[in-house]
Every structure is written in structure tokens, then in C-alpha cells.
Image (cartoon, rainbow, N blue to C red):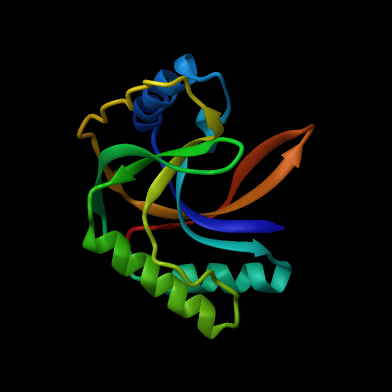
Length: 174
């Protein structure tokens, strides 16, 4: 199974994200836009995992101290890519998310999971391979905050050509 650990959003937060995504989508000449059900914040990408590895990830999640904290949207931006840019919504700097992500990553590496070695920059991917007309003005992001009360182990799979993310396990606040 292809897995990742994420923070999922309640419907009202997904709607706020979708509004920004739709602003870009309306102007785009082309692009691949994230559907509402797939909007999430990745904490750690795990890749292909077998059943034993999946149980190890659940145990690590269970051993992680998780207290409720608030995240705040900050800005929209894009990663420049050949073939179209990847658009995202960024978050204000947050010590709780940084500590959580570092803690999970360190525990996973101790159990010999191969995790990317790059600085974690929390963002929500809202579109890929986007081509916009010249002069497009990136949308403003309202300062919307939300409480994080759980982290989720997610499975990524293609079903009938569509990318589907399914929660297979959750760790809620202690």
C-alpha cells in the first residue's frame, strides 16, 4: 500500500481551500486540480508499505504525544515546474506542527523507513501542471485558522483512473 501521514480538514476548511483552488481553476488554461476529498496536509510521505510496516507506523502514531493545536492559512504560491506549476496554500509558521513532523520522521527513520531528507514546508497542494495566462494575479488567502485534533494514516490508490485517499487509521489528541 502507498501510505502517508496527514492532517485532514473538516468540510468548512475544505470549502475555504476549494474557493482559492477554484479561483485558480477558473483562470487556468489547463491544470490538474485536487478534488475536495483529497485536500490534506501531508506530515510524512511513506511510500509503499507492507502489512508489518503499516502496523509499525500505527504504533509510532500511537506513541506520539498529540495535543490540540491551531494552524492558520498564510498565503498561496506555486512551485515552478516544467509542464506546469504546482499550486499550494501555505501555513503560518507553527512550532507544534514542526515538532510533530520532526518527531514522526525521527521515529520512522529509527524503524528504517526511508524518508526524504529535505526541510519540511507545510503546504496544501491544490493543483498540479497548471498553466495560467500572463498577468494572472495570485489569489489572496484569508487568515483562516483550524484546530488539529488528530493525525491520520492515509492510503493512496488509483481507482478507475481517479486518485483516492482513504483514511485507514487515526491518532486523536491525548
